Image (cartoon, rainbow, N blue to C red; front, top):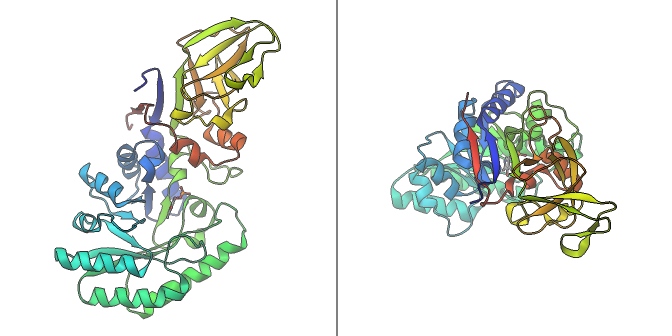
Length: 375
Ligand SMILES: Cc1ncc(COP(=O)(O)O)c(C=O)c1O
């Protein structure tokens, strides 16, 4: 692994964000969503930090991720929600994970594994209220709920939760939000009529947590905001702190004449004699090639832009006549409140026409994560 580059992760920021989000949600219990290696921050470390900040649930996409949390000694409730055929459902049940059930086939698998293991599986039924992605379709909901109620009566499962997920919570006022809330209320009423008594009902992600008090129910699920990044770029959330800083030492600098083409394809040409600094991070490390001539970087106390094509392992910055030398850190993104002038993951998302989720989750395995201790 590269020792000159690092993703510094501030565990105090993660726990502080969890605390702040729980307060923002009026004290509603908080699930820290730690899938995808804790959005690139390190799953187990992020989980511990969010639990320290007051989260009482953890969320993962895969059962394997939930099992990893258990192997790390984390006993907090964990919901894992993407369960394609062949997933280790039995292991999930044995580990006491809550399993997100999105259709009859998954429910049948869970029930048969519970029977085989002679265990009561914890199941959270997911209603598709309009995202049209995971979740039980409205036309199947009554049938799946009835089957779940029967399995509960047989002692094979406990329906611990009923939940859903918003399509457009990051666009406050979008008409689908109210429609999904109505559909969720209906789904809950059907579950209630079937005699289910879920411990938790939940639908809010970070964006809904920040903007929709009426969608809190018994639990709110915070992913991106827990990492200090706002899902709604224009929304100011005082106190939220980006937890990850991505930086690398400059490998070398060189002086080149005016008219020098830089990096593959010569997509940047110097307009004067200048100095170039080589930063040894590339698209294999999560710096998108689309950041060619666009990615923002703080180097030598000044905001600059990547010069030329981002390569697999490196990119170049034109530093003009500034005094920049090998060994200095170039900061790609971080927390400008701690490091004035540092670009943010949102700045990268803006220039690349994407979302900050994609920026932080894609930081490559070659970049070591360095953790600052919890305060
Ligand atoms: C089902 C589910 N809940 C919650 C989250 C967390 O969303 P966010 O990171 O926007 O808070 C995600 C993330 O994609 C998700 O898939």
